[in-house]
Amino acid sequence: MRINKTKELSSEELCKLVVKGMQEKKAIDIVVMDLRDVKNAISDYFVICSGNSDTQLDAIADSVEEEVYKASQASPWHEEGKTNREWILLDYVDVVVHIFKKERRVFYDLEQLWGDAEIHVVEETFA
Image (cartoon, rainbow, N blue to C red; front, side):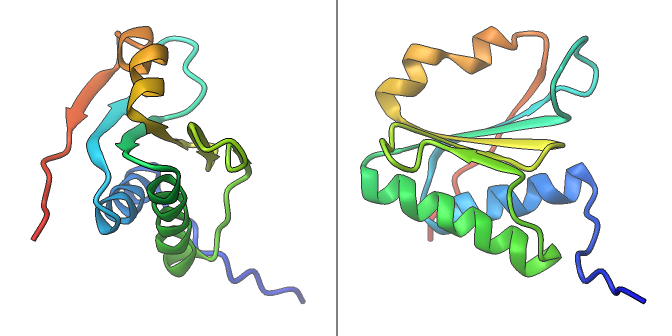
């Protein structure tokens, strides 16, 4: 008998862990886009943030992966952008994480592209 140690998280729980990981590394302009009622949406949520440097983008991505793994032993199904570090994508299927350098985020403007989504701006909680 095989025991599966992965804890199944709801997309809402996963979103909260992603945001926590972002906040741990002082990500800026964190936005949660609820895509559940958007026709042809590829996931339940997009969680988007910005960082100021290559090092910060890496740290944010690592922190998100760590928070999710601690809670569920789940790793991203797919990831991109860790080499060029202008836009790191972590795909957890139901939740897709986008970590941008500020200027790249403005260029791609996902908030506008997915304008039908319900958008929640996360308040900064820096101590």
